[in-house]
Length: 157
Image 1 (tube, one colour):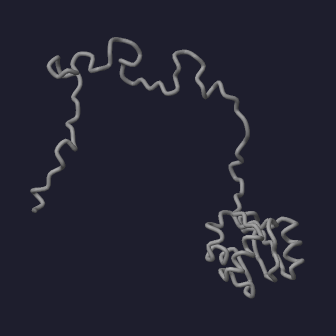
Image 2 (tube, rainbow, N blue to C red; image 1 turned 90 degrees about the horizontal axis):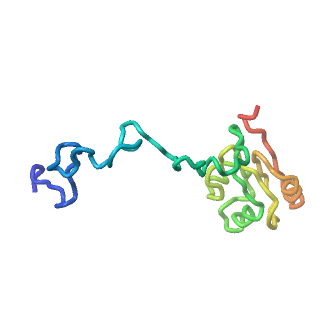
Image 3 (tube, rainbow, N blue to C red; image 1 turned 180 degrees about the vertical axis):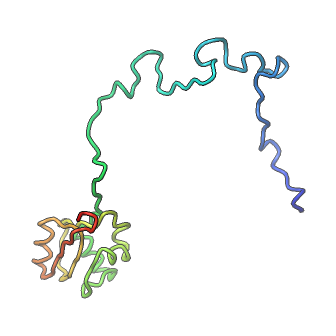
């Protein structure tokens, strides 16, 4: 087979319909747009128009607010950290930072930082350094004999 012998599969491509080119074409005169009316004219885009009835998106109530500059944290529970330490995916003897959590696969991406929550049993003596932590999580780590350092993210300064 040579480059000039390449062909598309039969029926894979169809020629473009040329509208408004006489009665013999089957799409002459009104070009398949019907007779008169707003939609037969050019330059008409009626998205969400419901024939004069109040459109659905205007009938539904507006609720809530999304703060444009809000911070999103990757959330990790202490129970999961313990599970990763038990599975030898995290080394409890070395300091555990956000980057170490990402490398181990516990956190997919840091986003604006990692926040630790106290759900689950925790018994490892570790040195954790993260962006945020709940009060209960800090107490749980200290009770296990470890240390939880909370850093202020650079963007918040």
